[in-house]
Length: 144
Image 1 (cartoon, helix red, strand yellow):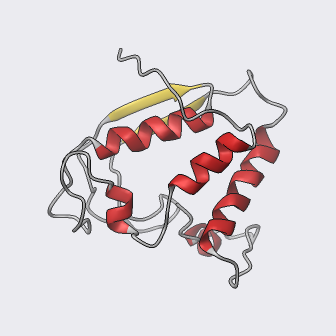
Image 2 (image 1 turned 45 degrees about the horizontal axis):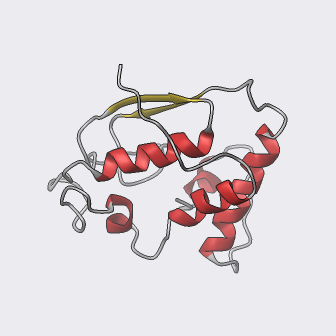
């Protein structure tokens, strides 16, 4: 969602940001970097999202907190945008964990990520990813 914690966590200093840029611009740049990495790998990559222990902050942190929803499961896709959209949708149809840092949008259908970070519009990343051809936000969920 563009928290920037990866910058602090990277021991090689490989990630840099212009701190005077807006959050939406930062999010779009993350999408462009992802596109640059995978643009020639379409049909050759598989994306896995583990919807377990979903905590308020990024996984790259060395610390963690109480999960915001219960464990949901695992997703697989050949489309990175579709899998992320499906992941968000699955998180948002869960009831939020009242013992976590999530204090808003706890209800089923509430936007859990906006509840945590109201100033960050996470949809910008997925909409822009779809716009530049990284993938599509449309998906078919097949339960196994």
